[in-house]
Length: 231
Image (cartoon, rainbow, N blue to C red; front, side, top):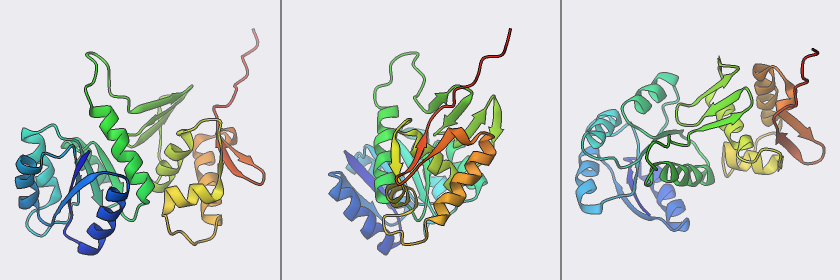
């Protein structure tokens, strides 16, 4: 798979390219929006990783220009973590949005997920962007969660954590792995950060059974069993 990286920060780009090459992607990095648009015709990427803060033009304008003539999947990789930035990027054609700093394993997983969603979709088959667990809907493309058709307002990191846990419903996931993959590959902070985010998600979902503690291991995401009403 060919990945075009449009990123002006050399330090960020170098680490990104190293990680993508290690994951067996063919990569090309350019530092400006204009160079990125030119590379579409010569490099013919399978996916574009696009920074928003470029020196010659805003990344949103690059996204619009790409989408006006190409269906190449676009993942925005940006330090802008405001909800409105996410909304605008997704509405103008980005397929996903990743906030810096990020874990490399998460980014590779998102690249592969976007590629699966956009590769030769069957006629009349909607993109597989929604995960449904009874009354809970997690929409990875729209970056939103619904519970009984009502929106659940999660922070960006809470959303990433819920998505990660729901990747393997029923599986017990280790604390160290969760911190490594959701926060950063070099996370050295306290695990209380994870506990605080778990507690916040449980409160917002209204039922702690959605995320169960596994003693000595970590946490497990599982759809609660709701009792049938008496008749």
